[in-house]
Image (cartoon, rainbow, N blue to C red; front, side, top):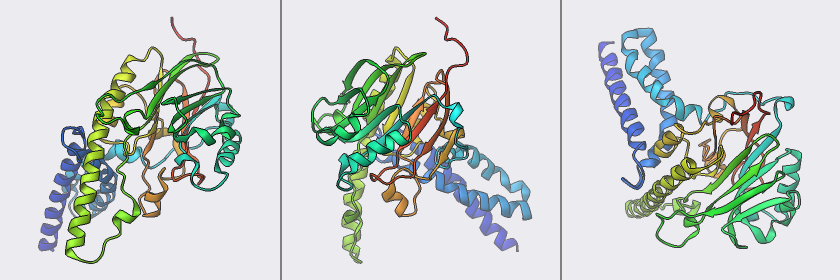
Length: 351
């Protein structure tokens, strides 16, 4: 028995320091140490071994629980940001809705733009923020929204904001730290929207993707193939993480400079955790933490591999009366849409 307890204590110490390493490592900006931000993907999955160890220590050595309890405290926000615990708000609690949806350029199947257009109306979406929007075939969606802006302002793939409320100002946002003139440099835009009782700024972004495809992970059972593909994917991950670190600096600046309460939304291509998420939580609320509901995981290819991870976020100024946030279980793209619900203000806003 003593030998088994020694093995468990040794494992627990290793688990504790691994949690610290992954947690604090993920807080390093990706442009400082490329690849560090990817550690935040692993963080939520450490919950289960810590819970198992707590059950074991509760039976044999309660005094050894301290490391696991500290680890659970560190895991709190990353775990809550992935697994919904709330309930859907009642209709009378909702006065307007914002949806963020990576529509994959409408390539999922023929006629998918019509399907998404019908979905927006059945869900009563008032403001729709899309990523990978192919403007040339977006007419079915645009027909339902009298106010719409695109970034960048061309007919190729970009981001878009559609609104049933008036847009009084708008513009493209450029990630200046991205050197090459690519989609990653110009994949953001904003719109100032006049609601019946307030004016808000929507910032819609699409951060750099790893670019890893399923075929990249098809590996022949040989040592050379494992090494070659591993190095190839590691370079892609590090490069994209570095770019997201640079993009994060611009996002923080845009939020600080906004003249109106901000709704920051989009495809972040990373889970809620790490440096950018932690810094944004000082400025904005994540409704998913306590009011998240609906399906698990926003990116279907990861979900199909048993990883129910959310890489689409909507963060909200605390002044705005949000009532809930949920993932809609539809498959019109390789992403699920993330919907945030808002209620009317209960108190008049101070001048």
